[in-house]
Length: 540
Ligand SMILES: Cc1cc2nc3c(=O)[nH]c(=O)nc-3n(C[C@H](O)[C@H](O)[C@H](O)COP(=O)(O)OP(=O)(O)OC[C@H]3O[C@@H](n4cnc5c(N)ncnc54)[C@H](O)[C@@H]3O)c2cc1C
Image (cartoon, rainbow, N blue to C red; front, side, top):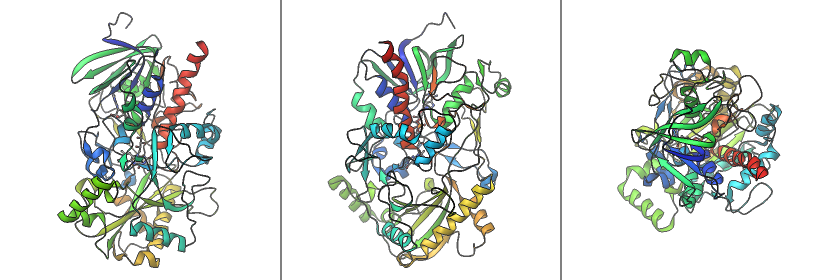
């Protein structure tokens, strides 16, 4: 490729404008002398439902902003294919996610450090969580103000969420008003990545305010097809812009921010991965790296769905034109009401076994219900709990299906593959039901719609989880950081065996964090920006 002609050049080429990619492009272009190109396969984030929090339901399966992947049939889900939405738009999945702001547990990052990842302990990463953040409550030991990512309290204290919190407290679980503070245990409201009732994606918080920097070029509708190499060095990216083949040269580095599905796919398409898989698709091996696409983790959840005694749920709003008009007006006039709601406004973080050092299960409550969110809400008053294990042991993989960059890769989640994982989800469902049996919750319940009271034994509960569960959309670790033979990047996020190439997104997590993954991915972007800039500053 030494004589390759490029369409244009930058110092850094960032592939993917998602949670991490927008952070990288924004931070690296702070230096006016550094030229940054940001390639994004999706388009501008103009769809209005992106910006209205409850519009989450509208973008959930909208192929104009979403890759709408489906995982391969999975034994843990009794052979079903699980729907895997991922953002395909500026902001990536932070433009279509549920906006729940959870960082994970301090123990998660201390484990990363314990696995050999210098610089990633809980004390190391805290400054990066804080640098990202604008906490509306003000600054304290764990939070800060002035960052691009606005973290707000929910204005909607729905009666069903209040009853859930009250019921859990009656069972002895502590109230927790800050899941991202000293400890995660307990029950309370989530904070959300919103600002004044609107979604704060990384496109909104980071990228848009700096779009006019002359040293930053954002190319939408640009699918990265292949990393270009000279010898063992990444020197550019071949991509397709609205169908036209283009190339961009990276004078310093190529940085992959395509997320846990697409970053391993692009590495594999480019010849970096397990050599037997590359050979299967006739892809020349640039570097044999066995861990690419392996070590996949995800949070698998099981639901409990209830019929509600009173017409107070979001389902009821959606059934009535008058109510829809009322909540629409409330939102546009005051920026409050049900349209400001995140995916699951309140939650309990709980240990299913006393001997555990920290919670292993999360149970969240939402004042709406559906069979499948992509098919719309139930036509009756309903609400639901979602139960998931925070630190699954099961690991799956992402593999190519073909050498065509336009074909999605195959996702094998391998859910509930270990006894610990099966035990945790069953025990979590039982705790959820105990909360539902408390007087504050019983006040609202006419009937348990799913799994239904005929389902009682542990085995029946497990079958319910396998038959009806799904992802809570947190795939990670497919290009995991580490110092072991299956690691793809080192603790500075450099791809092993290749110069000038990093991966910076959720795929580098050595283990999935105990909770939602957006905040930790943004932290990864903030820390990676420092890792990239440090040697440049020292050389200057
Ligand atoms: C429906 C849903 C709900 C969620 N809810 C929450 C929540 O409430 N709270 C939370 O913390 N987390 C949530 N998450 C998870 C969280 O949003 C993700 O973990 C996080 O956004 C991942 O960030 P990323 O940078 O790794 O990837 P992404 O944000 O997915 O970004 C990857 C970007 O790269 C682009 N791209 C991919 N391949 C290419 C290519 N070849 N060329 C060019 N561009 C490419 C994609 O289009 C995308 O824009 C949710 C996710 C989803 C999908």
